[in-house]
Each structure stands twice: as structure tokens, then as C-alpha cells.
Image (cartoon, rainbow, N blue to C red; front, top):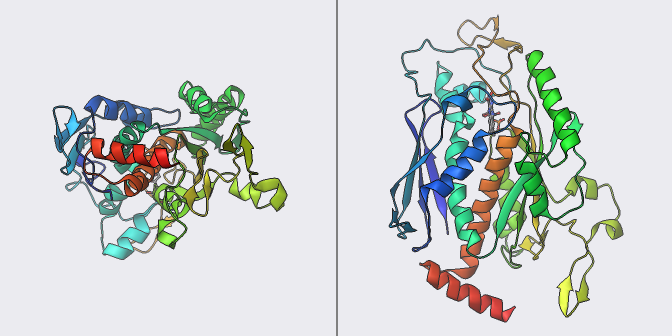
Length: 371
Ligand SMILES: Cc1cc2nc3c(=O)[nH]c(=O)nc-3n(C[C@H](O)[C@H](O)[C@H](O)COP(=O)(O)O)c2cc1C
């Protein structure tokens, strides 16, 4: 139903996206997109680039008088750190863990900058902008999203048993985006120690969505399963290497009766006392909050370099150090929200259909009446 494409390089003049398939009549302001862009830029452990950039979106088409028109929505974010890289000396030593070597082998480049300029996670800024539009659509129907960090490097948080919204609120007050203040302090210290050692960190975050109606996605085909679609979207974020739906790896170590969420009737309504399935059964949303966990590998660019090879001379060589985040897990969590919002909005439109918000609302109301 929905699709988007992005264009632009890390140090090019702008990042651009075209979003297609949005209904007409969705209220949308640049400021609500900018709010999400600011959230992505925050977080302890990021490089000085975040002080240079003040990401702001410009709508170039598809929005008129504060509402979507139903046409393709074009948007742009300027790169303040734009530089003329074409004249810079070519880089020939790939950084382990980055796209440098694989990208050069694929495209036959002799300057690795051509790889890293597009492979860079700077592109995730424009994904957050696109995700902000998806979450705006979902908000019209009571779906909300948030995220929190549950681990950075060797430090794991203890997550209190409270509603997802409360965890989002706690995370929002933390510069490591973690709802456990004791762990948050340990995470900050860990990031500092690792920074001093010229090294980097990854971690684990949770993206959750509440108010998601049952019945999005389908078990009827592999590519209609929401778990597959969510996992694919989240793992498409640079450096995300693992995705779980609910506590999937922990569930795998337990017995069935300790894992599966029982079904009750309470005051005439279907109830699930637990949500270890992360809101999905058979690839279909079951009305419980969607819980997606993602594992981010440590940032590949490290001040203390790993061994590499100069692709021109074929001799051992040290990769150049480029300004880099020591840890970007809090920022990646915001990008995760954007990708989850995108997949949910797409599935929501599949279910409700409609070319305008009012048409979708009419379909939504009919669907709710039949529940
Ligand atoms: C929000 C965010 C910020 C990132 N910042 C950096 C960075 O400053 N330096 C770096 O080398 N990698 C950074 N990465 C990770 C790389 O972009 C990523 O590891 C690289 O493109 C290779 O892709 P892969 O890890 O998916 O294989 C960041 C990733 C995200 C999601």
C-alpha cells in the first residue's frame, strides 16, 4: 500500500524521500516530523556531528494547507556537514565491520568514500521523517509507539513491570533512553570508559506499539506475516543484526506452558494475562502491544583501529579514523520506532483501504462495529 524511497549521501547537500500511497486529508506539520528528528539526534555517546546538524524537514510536495493531498509526498533534510568529497584523496583501506570492502568489491570502486557516503547511517534521518508521517496516520486510530534501551555493551537494565507507555516516558527523560536509572548511569560510565579506550559499543533496544487492532497481517503467505515484515524492516537499519518478537530467545529456553499467553474472558471481553508473544500470533496482530527487540552491533569505526589492508598496494594498513559515534543505541531505537510505524501503517491501510482519511475512518468504524 505504502512505499518510500530515499536518496542522498552522508555529506551530500540533502537527504530526500518520496512517500507514496498516503491517503488525502491527513493533518501533517513539519514541526511534528522535526520533533522525531530531534529525538534521533539525541543520546549519550554520539559524535560531534550531532552538534553540527539541526535536522529539519522541508515538505516539497504532497502537503497543502497542513494536510496530505494523496499525491506523492516529497521531503528533504539538509546536511549542514555537507562537504565536497569528490576532491578529497581517495580512501583505499576498508574499515572492518563497515560496508567499505563489500561495497567496493560489489561496485568496483577504487575510492571507498563512494561506499561509505551512501552506506552511512546518516540516511536514517530521512527514515525517521518518513516514520513520523506513518505514526501520524496511526495516531488518528489510537495506535501509539515508543521505545527504550535495555542494554548497552555489558550493562543490562532491569525493566520494571509497568505499561509500555510508562516505560517510554521514563526512557524519554534519560540520555541513554533507558527506563532504569541505575542501569542508565552504568551505561553512561561504560560509554565513557570505552570512549577513552578508543573503542565502541552496541546494545539492545525495544520498540513497542500500543492500541494496535487485532487482525493486521496474515498467516496466509510468508510475505504477509507481520512478524516477518517487522523483523525485515527493523533489521534493515544499519548495524541491527538481530530482531526478536517479544522475548523470543528467552522463550526458546522455556517450556510451552511457561511461554504461551493464556486466553480468558473477563467482563465479556477476551483477555490475555501475559504478552510473551509480543502481540503477534500466526503473523497476525492479536490486540496485545507489539514488542520488537533489536540487537545493534558495536559501531564499526573505532579510534583504536583494527587491522586491514590497503586495496591498492595489498599491504597491511590502518584504516583512516572518521569522526564516529561511540554508541548510537538510543538513536537506533528512534529509527526502530520509525520502521515499526511504517510497517504498521502499511498493514493498517491494507486492512482499512481508502483514498482519504475520512474514507479510512468510515472503514475503520465499520470494522470496529463488527468486532
Ligand atoms: C543511528 C546510527 C548511527 C550510526 N553511527 C555510526 C558511526 O558514527 N560510525 C560508524 O562507523 N557506524 C555507525 N553506524 C553503523 C553503520 O552505519 C553500519 O554498521 C554500517 O553501515 C555497516 O552496515 P551493517 O552494520 O548493517 O553491516 C550507525 C548506525 C546507526 C543506526
